[in-house]
Amino acid sequence: MALKNAQRFVNEHVDLVIEYQLDEEATGSLSARFESSGIRVIAINNPIPGATYFGANNYHAGLLGGRALGRWANANWDGTADQILMIDLKRSTAIGRSRLHGMVEGIRESLRQAPDATNVLFIDGQGQFDKSWEAMRRQLRIGRSRRCLVGAINDNAALGALRAFEEAGRVKDCAVCAQNGSLDARMELRRRNTRLVGSVAYFAESYGEGLVRLALDILNQRHVPPAVFTRHEMLTPANVDKLYPNDSLLATPRD
Image (cartoon, rainbow, N blue to C red; front, side):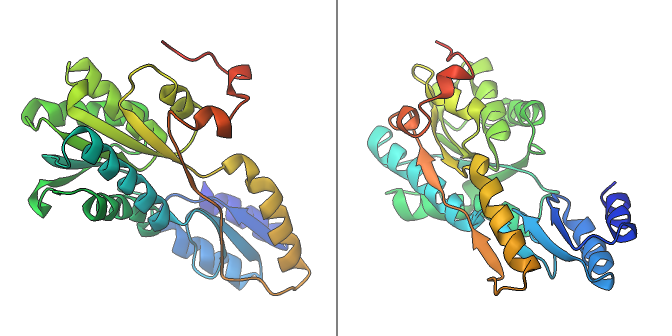
């Protein structure tokens, strides 16, 4: 579908394409097709060769999440953890997945006694709630670690993993950190006694203005940097209402 859409853009002689592409294997073909037709490209959150990048600083966002998990364990588990679990999206780009490596590093630099490398496990949840729930279910059947720090590539994966711990009656064995700061994650942060420590906000709702400004600069042949990073901030139960005070208009928090 991505290549079919790209050919349509070529046929219509567009000047610029704004592309969001998760599948790293498709990016080379897309790049070649756009470049051969002289089409400028802005790649959102996942890089495409030759395109101007706009979006997350993935590794930095991962560091924020990992540090939050480490600080939580320092305060609640005497600075120790038995295992680090990362809920992955293996088909994503290497840059997108770098947020998980950032989370592992953030945990290691902030946790007083970090587990060794043999106790760091990457589990493919495909970036989806149901798939992450199922993947964590399987892990919990064979794993008996009592203190698991769980990082996830996005909010859906984090919430799926969290539900698996709850279903198994082992919610106190985990602390979870998500990425994206979506409405579902924000509502979970308001849930009493949640084990979602936080979600790194990407503020995607503000992307539009920045994308339009960047697109106009490119089309008007102004100088633009190769990458334009958006801001990140850790959402927690303590600050979610301050940063997103209007969520109550969109959904009702659960008890």
